[in-house]
Amino acid sequence: MKCSSTDHARFDEAAVAAVVRSWSFITTPIRPSAEILAEYRKHFERSASQPILIFGATPELIDLALEVGCPEVVSMDWNADNFEAMRRIASREWDNVTFQHGNWVVPIEDLNDRFGCVASDAGPIFLSFPEQWQGISAAAYGYLQSGGRWVSRSFDWPGEAQPFEAYFQRHVDDFEAARKTLNREDELTAFKALTVHIRLRSMQNVVDGHGMIDQQEFARRNDQAARILIETYPDPAFREVVDMNLLRLVRPRPDQSDLQSVVPPELACLPLQKMGFRTEVWHFSEAIPNSGFLLAASKP
Ligand SMILES: C[S@@+](CC[C@H](N)C(=O)[O-])C[C@H]1O[C@@H](n2cnc3c(N)ncnc32)[C@H](O)[C@@H]1O
Image (cartoon, rainbow, N blue to C red; front, top):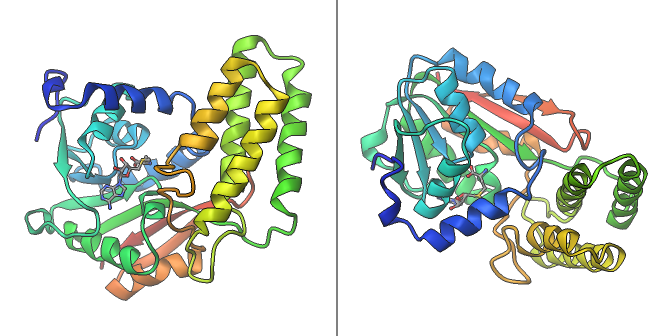
């Protein structure tokens, strides 16, 4: 389906509005930073004359694909409301972006051999490892032309020694030190960033040997952090940030998250290599050192 601003009738307006609002609370590095986008750009530019497929609808990635001049941009998601919300957040017009309803791990034969690049901003962390990572790797391999590239960001927590609580306190202390010089708007932005960093930290050391997240521990840490922040910062605007970023974001149930896996790069490469991809890994340094990487894989 082609998307345009006249397509509103087919979306659930309330759901779209809720996603648009929730997105305004999220900062980098959950949203991709300039450093990360510059790395995606290098890959997108290599196949800028070819169609590109994005798993998910990250507005920064679709905007980037349009900016480098990809002749066709297709966004695949199983939730059209999310796509519509991302379209409204985007900086560019998406009149020529095509929405493809689909499950990333279920191949769609019509799309085979069509794309110079298949990319996602951390989509695989919503999948189980290794089964569904194998599924998405196989689907991407099929969709790419020979010489095409798979590019996706992911998160990793190598060798972190301190307990979550120590990092939590350090992030709060940093925020407290910084906020003294900030006006109200910047203070609120810094508080959003604080909760985003706590969210990322809460993934640290809660994964098993296969990269699967311990959902209950992940939820417990976010709840514990939320309780302390609500007590410390009773201001209603701060309270809403805690609610959105720690208690609701990708948490369909109180004890569960949509996030499934945080896989270290050496493991993350395996399903791709099994398909025949040649892989390369780039670590980004921003905000939380070594907390994430971009995995690029080329199809021979
Ligand atoms: C919370 S959003 C995060 C934004 C993400 N960075 C993106 O690219 O859209 C995750 C998105 O992935 C979609 N999603 C998760 N698993 C999926 C799957 N197996 N197939 C298709 N879409 C999926 C959800 O519907 C949602 O729009």
